[in-house]
Structures are given as C-alpha cells and as structure tokens.
Image (cartoon, rainbow, N blue to C red; front, side):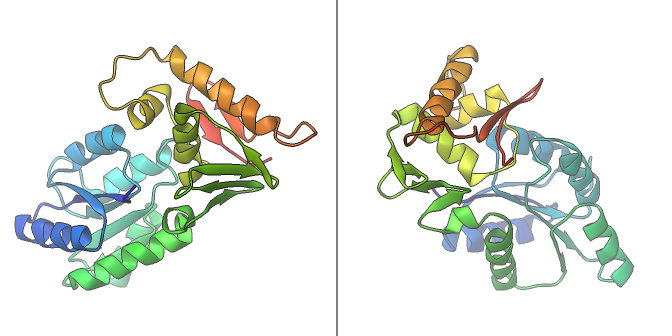
Length: 231
C-alpha cells in the first residue's frame, strides 16, 4: 500500500509541482490550498505524513500543526512545515509548534522528496521496510504472514487489515470510525460494534501465540478507541 501524503499550500503552481514529484516518487498524494480543509482531510483520509505551508487561508500551517499535536490520534503524525520565512527564529517557532522538519522557500522538489523519505525512515520505519515490527510482533506484507515471538499467528482478512493499520502507526490512537474507514472502506454501512468484535478476535489471536499467555499489545483507550502500545 503506497504511503499517503497530504500537501496543503495556497500557491497553486507549487502545490501541483510538489504533488507531481511526490507521486512520481511513488507516494499517494492528496492536496488542498486551505488549512481548515486540510484538517478535515486529515481526519477523513488518515495520511501517513503531512506537508503544511506556513501561510494559508482560514488556518495557518503553524496553527494546524499545534492542533494535530494536541490530539491523541494525530500527535505522532509526521509533519513538515514549508515557509518563505527563513529566519532562525521562524524555523525555531515552526519546530517548537510540533513540526518534525522545516523547509525554507525556495527549495527544489527533489529536496522535499528527500526530506519526506528521511522523516519516514526516522518516524515510521515500518512503512519503508519489507517487514513491519513492534516488540516481538512481525508482519510480512508481501506474504501476508504474522509472527509473534517466532510463532506464526493465523488471522482472518479483517483482523490482518486491522493489525496492519496498528503496526504501521504504533502508539497512534484510532477511533472506531477511523478503523471502519481503514478496514471496511469509507462510507461502508457497518456498525461500530463490529470493530470491537474484530479487535477482540485480533487480541485473542496475538495473546495466545505460543504455549504461554502473552501481554496484550493492543490497548483500549477509554473514550477514544484502540492503540498498539508497549508496556
């Protein structure tokens, strides 16, 4: 599954140029010119990384960055800020607002692609590896196989898709509606209780791998949803 990137920039020519180069590099790209629209798209589309221009209508990239960092489901989302403001103080403000990286305009599309890849290697290594790992859990996307502590775990299609979503974003809290969109598809007519049932099956399968009970890695977060967590 291609890595999903959202770009928000109010300069149409730059938006198209950056989108073209990211798509050419193999990423799945969505775009908008509006900060408020970007927030809605992030909630609905669940990108793996966002690129935000500092100055945008309705909501600045800095303001949006602060909102994303304050929410449980987006606090770990990788963020790159773009800005024509190249002073050291502006860069510091951008990073202090929660951005993972900061690019001063003008810059080349090739540099942005390199920064995106570097940030994904640091923050989301599972997305660029052939095996997704979390503690003693391994998922091999090409074979659609799962192992825990070296023991193979047999999962149904929905449980496998749920685990893929969790292990690609360890620590992120997913609401039931987000998991419905990711696994069953946006707009699918499925009751949210179905998510609870499917998560329960997945937890049982993972916790019973091998000959002894294992600690549960998938946690229910009261009032929020579910997350893959250590400890």
